[in-house]
Length: 235
Image (cartoon, rainbow, N blue to C red):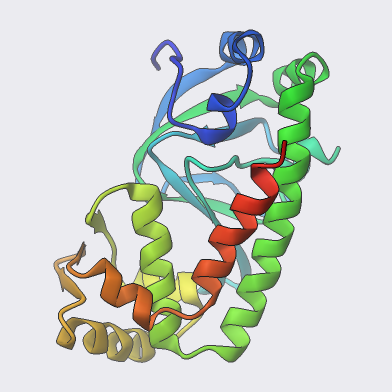
């Protein structure tokens, strides 16, 4: 583990210097690996995470091999909102989708910091509202939009958090994230590949044409961006 530095997490970077110092004095900079489980559903949460270069999926599991992504969190947010809301039990299964760095704070330390950090408290209250809208958007997206549009949206969201045109990805993982069959994912990925929007080989995804993906993506991608922009940049 490394000494925490002023970092790429947008929530922490938005804090005044005094609150940043207070937060970072309690935080540890750690490395997260692809498919690492941070906590299981209904498990007691011991840490909250503020990703800097890593990104994390929260999943609903209905059966041992059945799951769907509820939300994706990267440098724009945090994992552990249940702690903020006064419940130490995790509402979802959390797994690392993109390896990288994160700031980790113990649950009790986080609550202590929060009492002395009014700006952080205010930001996280607004962020909680953003997440609720994001989850609702995902429900509508899954119900009403075609798999290729949902895949394009998801790839754009992932690229935003990876900040790279390349990232690790398997079709099995995609099927879990989108709640779709492997056959459906293969067909949708082939459509995007044939249009030269992506290149996919040996578990590696390469975004070739971001603007083209934005044209294919459903309206939910832009709705998520606007949701964050409106609610997180209030004065």
